[in-house]
Amino acid sequence: MSTRPDAELVEAWGAGEREAGAELVRRHAARLHRFFRYRAGDRADDLVQATLLECVRSRGRLRDAAAFRSFLFGIAYNVLRADARRGLRDGAPQPMRSAVPAPGPSPSGAVAERHDRAQLAHALRLLPMELQVALQLHYWEELTAAEISEVLGWPLGTVKTRLRRAHRDLGETLRSTPAGASIDLERTLRSWLDDVGDA
Image (cartoon, rainbow, N blue to C red; front, side):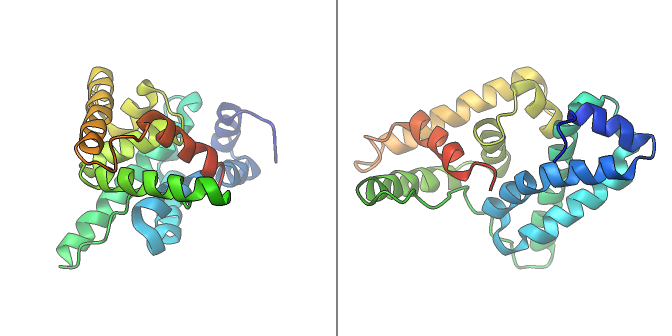
């Protein structure tokens, strides 16, 4: 895999270097798959492909080569929303799952992790999809608030407010149940990032 930065690859791709575009796809396909896998299950591969095709078609709209990751996840978010709308139109809503990877292999920690994640998954499902996506982009993809603003099309202040509100609402939901009261929300959200890595 190339060590060229995304911005350089985007510029080269725009200048006709096909291998630069292929490298961008290789570099980001696993992240896209992770984004969709925990949101759309079995449809993840199709949604990744739709995102990459739209990225190729839309690359001329990318104004700042350094913002490629935000551009790509913005397309992914729109593909996800279109998929959800399509499911509603077809009369069979597509399930939007919470982003819950399997717990780690440690037998003693696995039970506690599974319990914490189950409680957190339940609380996440109570949030609107766009807030779930904002949290996923923040914790898993480590996008900044400014990048999330680009992806979701929200003003920067709105992103910060909604992330705080989503975090607060998750905490309140967890504290309202005896089983969830002891969960360290920040630790559990961050641990998901460690577990999913580049998968």
